[in-house]
Image (cartoon, rainbow, N blue to C red):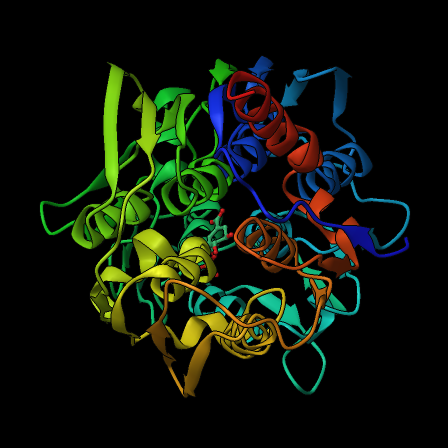
Length: 439
Ligand code: S3P
């Protein structure tokens, strides 16, 4: 695709209400658990983004009948042993979640599966999954550098006590999915608490899975009878975050983001905003397997922030946006303990620094984070921004552009479809209303 002209010079802020698309992590999991449950699983408000469609096609290639009508999906589950050997290697596209969770799910099956991905995914580390899975007897062959393409040689698994070396919900979930198929119970011990959608959803499907009071130790009983469910996917806080930040940094803004997931393993961006002096209110809270609320956000002037390792998992995907908030704050912000950013869809420490510098933001890279000197106004050095093929970098820069005094364009905007295909029209809907109201 050609470069996309971005909206700049925003005068009257963002206004209005928006329901963001369904949560990506929950959509992936609903497809996988639906496939290994007995009976039909109905998924409502499913996220039809490129990443979730990679999971959907992979499950179909594994013999599961799935029908989709807009954001309603129906999965005909075949039980824990009902998957079929695929006829060809499975294409994971750009999706780390699809790859890593499937490694756990396929490790205990009775067949071999080959997995491959796009150039970005083929650079991402997979030993973090294959090594702990091996402790349960799994056999996953990666390249000599521990990357895709990989072969998962399904075999009977043993329960184990596995201590994870990285704080990663993808790795944890892979272990849990393998543990369901093992002969004996398993205990998985996390380094830091990470998003717990797999645990919550599995409980709903009838599994026996418990998290200890330390929020780190998860016990999984093997061979459960999972029953198909109706999963209503709440709005993705990681998508809402782009507009939370857009409204916070754009004068005259007031928006409401409807029905956003506020699972506390995901709400780091709300805590960050609160600490920086943001103006945010939670309304119409609902409880359930996954809690949700409407988020009302207004423009605010911001103070700098310091983040360390233990705060990172709950804000991991929003760190590029935290860097943008820091760039708009008055003073020096320091983000540490975020070395995981180096192995995301791009090296997000490097890409965030490179792109924000184009706007004249003062950014220093650390091995595990960023130092950012915020300033109320920026001097544009280079008007051609680049997503680097990374959806979250592309969206963060489109939000940063709203404050630009100069015209800007974005290279590789198509990457945004990985998690948020309707991002630009949703952004426009909030801007148009604001601009019209203030005429
Ligand atoms: C995800 C976990 C996180 C997150 C990713 C989605 C998940 O990755 O960054 O976008 O759905 O489990 P890590 O497990 O690598 O931290």
